[in-house]
Length: 114
Image 1 (tube, rainbow, N blue to C red):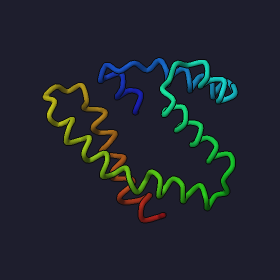
Image 2 (cartoon, one colour):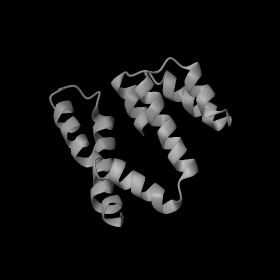
Image 3 (cartoon, helix red, strand yellow):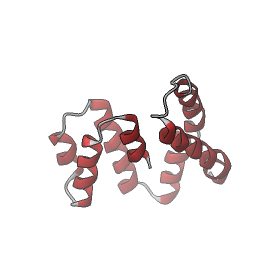
Image 4 (cartoon, rainbow, N blue to C red):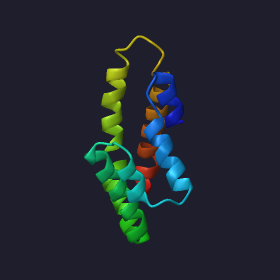
């Protein structure tokens, strides 16, 4: 859904498509990221995410995602939705739906479960 929202908004999906193809082909993550011209903060975030997935036990991983993302994202996304609502076109419609759904899941399910 996120990728479809990118397309609707007119954003390039080239880099995320290349990342997904590389992961699906079982290529080394560092090789995939090093072969792309991505900002260093994006590479750090992706590397940290995958390192957490591969090196953490279940409890640690749940805490990482709860306190590092699930607990923070709803307020962040609400602010983003307010900014998107200032744009009168429909090109962010799917992205806004994605954000709203993410907020609902985090507020009603993931947050309380954590």
